[in-house]
Image (tube, rainbow, N blue to C red):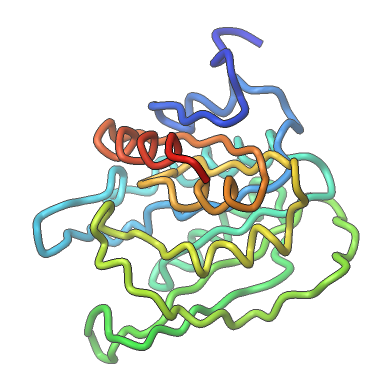
Length: 218
């Protein structure tokens, strides 16, 4: 391994996951939970944007790198934007993942409008190999009861929808990876559940926010 970050557990790397992940040992992560750019060219009301939300160049390389670093017979949960669902599924399959489940997160509010009111988010459950059945099954509809007001990140997810995913597909002590860390919510949920965590975030502003959150006591 060349030029690899010295600590893989309980740290957030400021960098591009497409460049960072290939430096890490294959099969070194137990579970991946990530919220990558939806390639929606999203801009919040206060003008904030998401890096690489305007192109697909990173999509296949990122999931190929994720597949490599994930242990065999393990899971990945990836949020995605439904207008580009076909591109995400194509990237999952090209990397080697199997789609084995799908989650819907219904909201009690409208987050946007088009031909319909947007009132849900969604994520795919992906498998590398053949993960054994978990002792307790999780439902594929998880209510989005908390509104974060996107204070820390323009697409900030509430801990309440991330916690059940980590509980369902990892065990205490496992290493949870989020290569699109944002404000660090997935890693904070992992920390609160007694998992080790590893994050990668391209934007220095969000890296600083996530690092500060994870430095606080669980």
